[in-house]
Image (tube, rainbow, N blue to C red; front, side):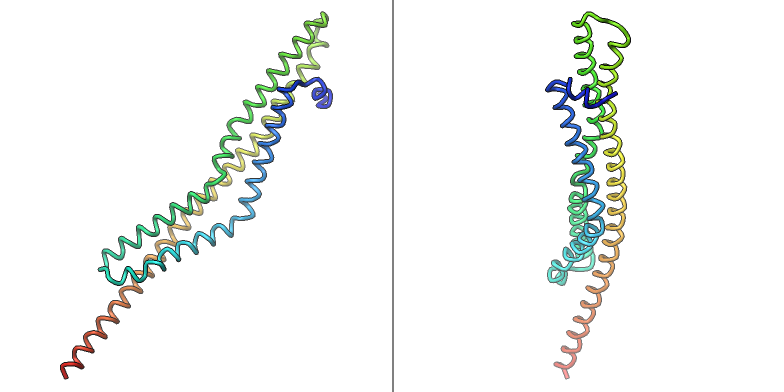
Length: 206
């Protein structure tokens, strides 16, 4: 099977399908490389955003009781976790789409190539194994290209999904730690303010 020979005899549809597969392959490797390079930065940014989401509420939490502070802080953390998970999932749907479509694109290219090969053999008037095997074998190249694109896309998809699951677990742990620290700090501040108020009242009475 000589790809150059196949390319010379390929029509516009076959060449278009080839470039579609090439674009899918480039997109797959680009998304995977960017995700692997930005793994640590994405996790650190998510941790920072969680901390900042609670820091913005500190002044508002002071006027609430313990149960209200806990509920408000939990909702803020859950909302931020959801936003970070949505940010981390960007590009994963593209990988899933490529993994699903690439084999069918390659198969369609093969069917199209075999159809044209058989038509050419029929028009030549020479029907035999030697005349059919070569063009059909060259058309099967498109199936191989489709699988060559789909397999890395499936692997990249699974890698990204596994990373996102780990990220979600880490964010949950970080959120619980931040919630505990915030509640303890707020209780400490409330107790300090209460003691200061009581001391002020006692001093005023004396």
